[in-house]
Image 1 (cartoon, helix red, strand yellow):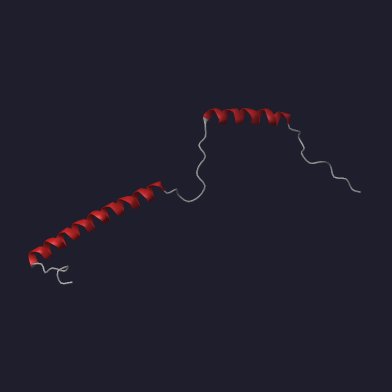
Image 2: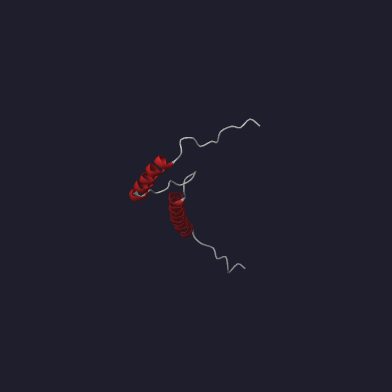
Length: 82
């Protein structure tokens, strides 16, 4: 077991620690970039706005004008006192 955990000098320990800090910093930067991408792609609250096309809006407006002239003046029937 002692051969597996070979003793190292203080300079080797400092070098090993610096490598570990560099790897940790790189992993942290990658993780924060991934979180930022996820936050950017996440949809906001509420229902998404509907994309309107000019031609559909104009045809709907023209159809609404034609329906208004054809609609009867009174939509409710007359009241009957039985």
